[in-house]
Amino acid sequence: MAEIRSRLALLSQNLRYRAHVFPLPARSLVSWAEGLGLARGGKTILYTGHLYQLLPYLRVLREREQGLVRGKDWLSRLAPVLNPWINVSRLAILGREERRLQEYYTGVLRGVVKLLRKCGVEPGYLYEKEYYPGTLAYDLGLEGVFELQARRVVRAFREAGVRTIITVDPHSTALLREVYPQLFPDWDFEVRSYLEILFHQGRHLPLRGEEGVYLWHDSCVYVRYLGVVEEPREILKRAGLEIREPRFSREITRCCGGPAETLFPEKAGELARARMEELSTLGPGTVITLCPICHFNLRAVSGPDQRVEDFVRVLRLEE
Amino acid sequence: MIRLRPEWRKIFEARGRDLDARRCFNCGTCTTLCPLGLKVLPREIFRYALLGAEEKLRENREAIYACLLCRLCEVNCPQGVKITEVIRLLRVYLAEEDLEVRS
Image 1 (spheres, rainbow over the protein chains, first blue to last red):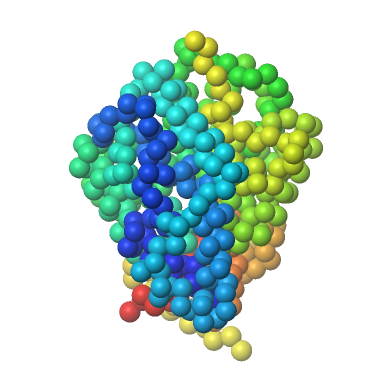
Image 2 (tube, each protein chain N blue to C red):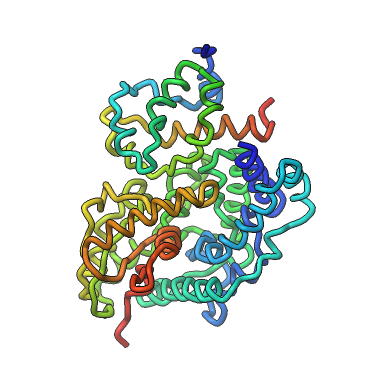
């Protein structure tokens, strides 16, 4: 019980004082865009929501936090007192495996930009002015700091002259599409997922994919919050790829366990293993995910002969 | 003995938030579908919330925070209860208590 309290306090403080639930050095959030020549701001921007950048750090950060909140009782009580003064997140150092994952996710984000450009969309980017959307705070009921963060996000959009926001993950998309408009009566931004752009504006693209057997894992948020079911399937079909689907797919897809990762990592692992087991009954093949949290969580429990790939990474553009 | 405060939900109503759980008729579809297999989620929790059994809610804090918000229960709820919104509201209540931000 004290552990939940301490974790909530740390997350809440980080968001209030550092504008992030897991404050990392700014470079680790924006370096994926190096050399892409993305304009600063503009009417249409790519909004990363920081999930792909954050995930490689998650385990390292959690282990550090566990040292604080799972320590002796006095340490658990002291952690929220110390946290405003000592930012433990900045001390996170990635191991070899996490660096590999960071490169992989950098490839996903760069892949999205490449696909958008081929669709005739040239997005800008807010770089260090891009704020974390506050997803975790919203989900955990940290309403006050969530609203504070949402105001920062919207202010940055307004200052940069943004009209259309292109998202790359389902969680940020759902938050900006369903929750932000309720908070801001003057909300007039258009929120589009890169999947929707690729589906509608990318019909002409010469997409290809690596030959193989693909096992499909739907994201809960895409299918049950946003109704995005057919679009990614159709895109893969255009690329000539066929997928196998488990019994629990589409609107009844099973959760990867990722949302439990912050407070109950053991439960997250159990659910991910159960889902991977279900997918493996379809035979050997590469699991495709659409959400970075799903990718991170399923990959973490995959065996040496199992591959888990992000949707963007299985698509190839014929030159 | 469980102490009940039926007027408890007015905390939410006063903020313009509806504790949508009133429509729940306790069929158990949600509990059967819950990927976490937590027997207390969500219908039993909803009864506590509607009756204002605050102590019971506190006792089940872990289950309330464990919910994945995956909406598997919600899309199959015959009464159309916005289950994840109710869970979020309960978290708001508990988090404010935990962080001592409620006046």
